Image (cartoon, rainbow, N blue to C red; front, side):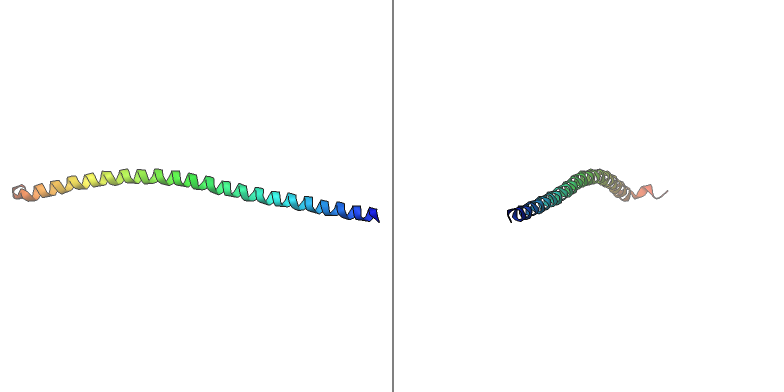
Length: 85
């Protein structure tokens, strides 16, 4: 009878060890996926900031050109003699 109890105990320990390994594997997979997601978000943020900075520079250039054109138009409008030849 003692032998049967020992086998049952060994089986229970084996099941517990197997469950523990499965839980560790699950936690490891979750941790890895969270890390990958974090790395993606960091890279996405850096890329987005870079693209927005580039776009901002282009907009600044366009705004300066527009201001120059506005000055030229207002100067030409003030000097109507330029148009009557």
